[in-house]
Image 1 (cartoon, rainbow, N blue to C red):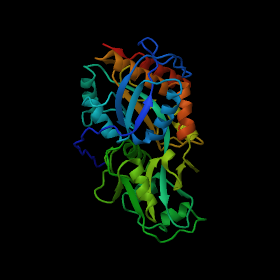
Image 2: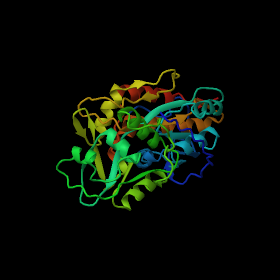
Image 3: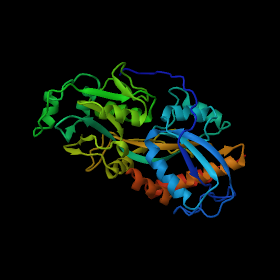
Image 4: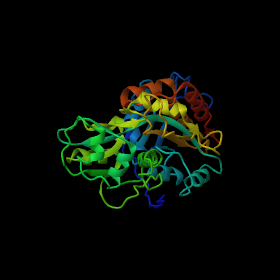
Length: 370
């Protein structure tokens, strides 16, 4: 496989999406209340700056609304700058916590940098948002498409260039496919969604994708968009375009049903949850790190293996006790039953199953000041 290791210089962004939220506790002992999301009384005040995965944008709005109902006093700024920039800004101390659509690794030193940022302790990583990635398209006269991972890989690698190509027609015998030129659109920024998408193509594409999984798009040139919204705008603005994005933000664009075994499955939270349930934990991680290696080749009925598990990244301890209590309070709400249900209703994500949720609650609930 061709390995792509592109190092970008990322400048800390100024948080732009203000989420007025409230911390859950005046102490570190029970910052989030119980798993139902009952946050209790508060006395904390202050501001947390955070950001990262743009896929979480809709869910963050739901978490804001749910948490704000009973709480006030703490302002949390979550800037949807993309996973790569979010992790970079967390590691350099600009963010109190980050959201990332792929878990930390040391391909470019991110895991080591996070450990250094957290005073030599292993960083916390818990899944908070599980969602299908939709292959979205805009093709006049065509509302639905079936595609295999192999064909998707050839499209994005420029080997299939017209919509009436025989490989596409074979999978869509009843569709009236035009000869329109295919215009693939990729993310221009460093993105966990890109890493999940390229991981899917590499593992499920039957050798058609000649690159490793990477958060930076591995092919030079081509049309692109910054962030999830930029990609959606680029696909929406042309005819014959195709891209990939968190399903919650696909809007009115067509969405591909991907081949799983002998079936073609549309993006769904239920299908994503099925895949996560059969996936294994990443090896060699600490007790506070819930990184999961997603099974991209499962043929389980109803499964949708093109998904992302978006993580919350934080430290176990913070120098400032007030900051620690605010981080613990907000993250505890996100992984609570109430927080997960709010995201499911707002963004169509799959709630964490009870065992994963309980483990995540225990990890973030233990965040404290030094």
